Length: 111
Length: 114
Image 1: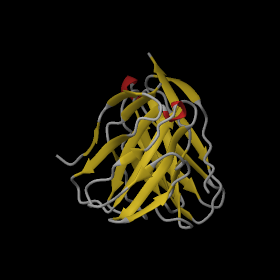
Image 2 (image 1 turned 180 degrees about the horizontal axis):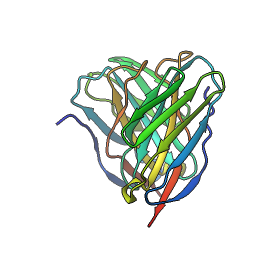
Image 3 (image 1 turned 30 degrees about the horizontal axis):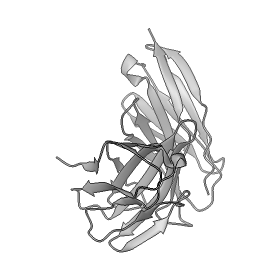
Image 4 (image 1 turned 60 degrees about the horizontal axis):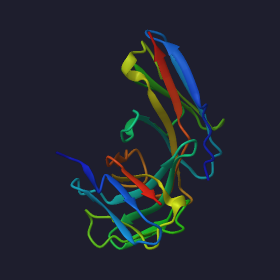
């Protein structure tokens, strides 16, 4: 299984940068996803990494180190609307179709 | 509009009264999955389906049943609901389970069992 861990909460100021870390125990690693979930809403996809390195998508970037079982999501130029929970998730080739999510990191953006 | 729909959105029921939460997607996705979300525990997978007539257990399948008779529908059945099944439920679908295929989530069903 993945046993995905991420911090519970982070607070940052509007315009700043925040890095959300995620660690996982690999067992047939099958790529790592990041989702954003606003309060009372469904999760929406942000990024996917399967190879080592940084993937950049506008203000959001995601990094993966397969050897270390480590990923992070980088949110730049924070806006108030970025206040949300960020979920790290992974699948495994041991059981195609099985996914595990971290408990989510609540990011609070302050003025 | 490409979407995943769930019904009902809110449900209050009593212990032991069988209920079904429907899930439907219009994207011709092969893969569908059910999750429950509880405070502090995140999303936990209940059941998933790789294709029609192919279903398998996730991490928390006890007390739930599913079926996949058509590609677009994946209902979640609680034969005898109990209070510990009070939760927020999400259905999701993706083109395929492996690889970079993101999951699209339905709006959620908030279930309360008294």
